[in-house]
Length: 302
Image (cartoon, rainbow, N blue to C red; front, side):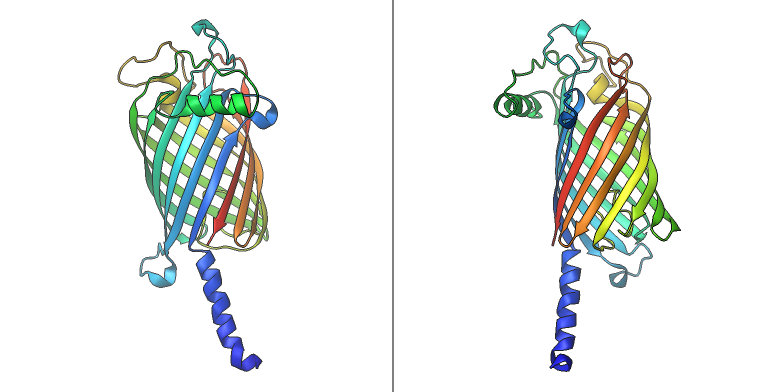
């Protein structure tokens, strides 16, 4: 009986494993409320979907892993004095950013790849839905007064492009150096960004750099690293780079850093990722030099 049914069962298991690795849906959330604060980059919510289009055996190219990723996201910025209406007391602008994003990525193998993407969206308290969502949450969930959203950055449509390069180098049996470089260019944000650190554990590839589909294995891995960024222009902090459309002037710091520590757990078909972030000041003269926030993301693969 084992001989009779062994091959069909093996084929079914292989097909199921392959099917699980083809697509994902996910929810990715940034928030600083876990630390009892609500300021600066105070919230980010991202709904994500992606699929693996090709594997090496399906392509003649050496960059045989090809994937596409879509995101609907929203970011919210808040000053440290949330209820003030005085411009002199505002050390950070109110701003919302609602966008649709698309990325295409190619990997030669799970530790080496590149990609490009675009984002299109809108800023503005009402247009980005940031004001109504933040105040609804504050009023009905936290039982707090609504925020003033005084002198928020104006509504504007934006187009942004980005290019990325990923690579990892194994240092030991369960230790890897992981690196991700990214260039962003557009009306919303223009910057050079490098994220790097040590990846420890069983998970293959570069699982902390996006929703990876190239190679999957059940297990746990940890990440300890940082982000270095050179900011050329950021509409969410300074308004338009072509005309003065901000109600007040704040100077963005060109050099930024974020310390990161976290872990990822994958058990077919679920993936959970928790990452602690501690960022330097994005604005000159911020009342608080560093800002912690937590990223929690969950994905279902099918």
